[in-house]
Length: 162
Image 1: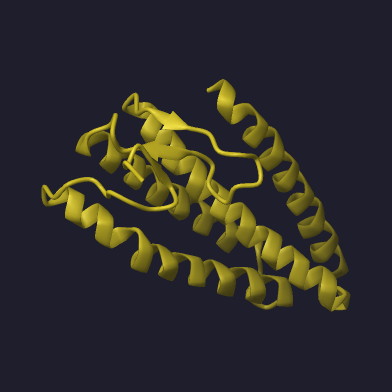
Image 2: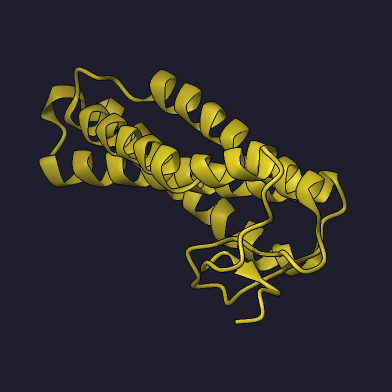
């Protein structure tokens, strides 16, 4: 877990900044400057993505998966080692990400108003993120669940022989 500490600190900072933006945006109401509202919505969506990634990591950790941590600037929180993990670990990692997305959507839906520009931006971008998950992640999860091999390539995996 020590490899995750820099990511935890980074993400705690992002969550804090997002909370401050949401507070200022809500306090300003209809008078919220458009740039503040757009930034608030986008940062809210970023927090949703981060919750999705932390869900993946928690799912992986729950089953004792072997993972590697990339550089701090990577869009991925960790890299899943397909050479040292099996389908059970892969599926737990996948389901954890989906659970993180559900938590993120519930939080964004309760914190962002669809009647404000920040809510429209944040909820719209979060919807695009969910669609991306269905296109990019769900098919792989379903293949592994049906008994097909773990992915042999991809930017979020290590140990693929590439």
